[in-house]
Length: 201
Image (cartoon, rainbow, N blue to C red; front, side):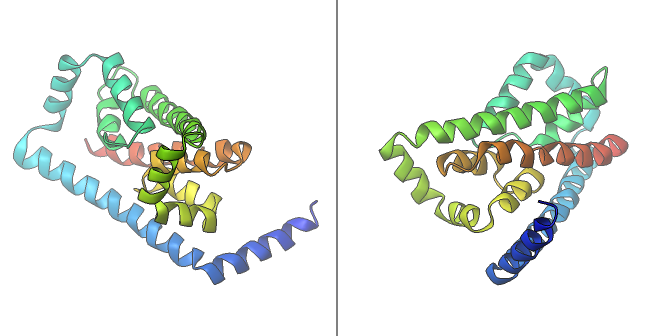
């Protein structure tokens, strides 16, 4: 098996070079770096000219108790990703144990990705819904078929629509044992944003 690994890696390298995988990776990593800059810029502008971030987070905490907030975040991560994780990461910094809450948020997001995968498996059995989803997200599905695990890693790490990619993995019957390993990269995203946002706000 060890002798086959270099051959497999060389073959994957040729595939990525021919299919434009490296360009695809470069574009999305640039988006990831750009998204960090954009998030920091937005939070700075909000904190400086609109309302103090700490006060806003405290107001949210008083208005929505922790279970409700976490439930809304989980529902968002399962469906369409409406609630951006960065908002919850800033909120986590105001909790009693910020690092544990950050880890819990990452675990929730990871679990939601697995739930989205099985939603995709279920939707595969519903022809009308399946065809509508395939039509709406055709380009993303084409990328999944072309790049496979690379797209899953980028979706977990970058602004790509993570819940949609997870659902399409289930819909396309991407091997689950590979899926659960690749989506662990989601923890890395929360770690990177936590490292940046915890030190700034």
